[in-house]
Image 1: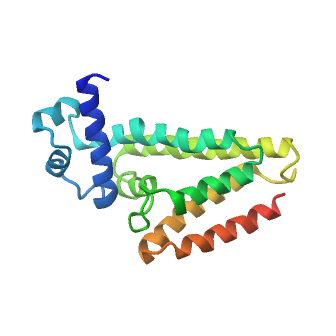
Image 2 (image 1 turned 120 degrees about the vertical axis):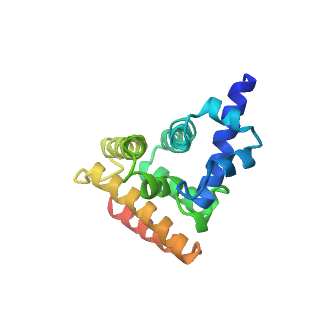
Length: 196
């Protein structure tokens, strides 16, 4: 990796960590520069604005990480409901980066930026749609394999699971406790049992 590419990646990674903790709107470029330990010139060489950098975080960090976390995991297990449950369990309970007090990075970006910035709205919509499509396709395969009941609507299940995940992340942030995650996971497992 060239030095310029490494600098850009460092800015994106450190800025993402800072924004996840503080929020996009309240994080200044000066704070990002101080955290990444690059010069102002280096920051502006790579990004004309903070919004441009935020879009790069979504497109260059969040989307590829999503693919590794979700798509690869879904393809490793024959039972889609078990795969989806394990993904959600990992995100809520085992993932070291995602902290209960800060919620879900994607959901945070949607709440903070989607209403005011069309480019963010589009990038976040694509990320959300990719997640929904991955779950939907996996559930369709489960139906074809006879693991999931024929009458189950894959899109409904996907939207229900994703919205539940985002919602419980927000509840966890409010309560600053993973206890609510355990309640959600128990309910999710019970729901999945009705689909088989």
